[in-house]
Image 1: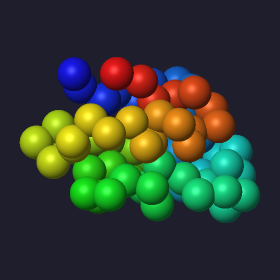
Image 2: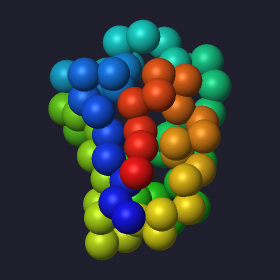
Image 3: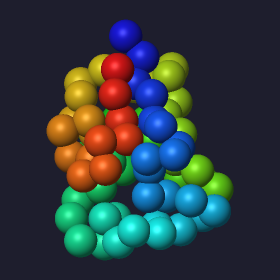
Image 4: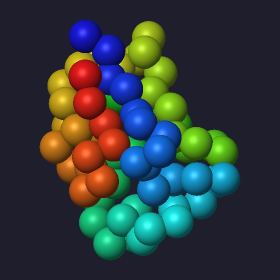
Amino acid sequence: MTVKIDSEKCGWKDGKCTCGCCAESKCCTDVCPVDAIKRDKTAVVDADTCIDCGACIETCPKDAISF
């Protein structure tokens, strides 16, 4: 499996949280046990680091992350 982030749904755009979800609750980068999600201009998953645990999927209020 590969975790994917739908950039259209994700609140992280152009290097900042545009919807407030990152400040209101724990976001995907906070719950990832192996720090596989990085945020630059967009949020991306490092497939080589990701262990497919699904913690990011469960915590995303925008339903932007899936397998």
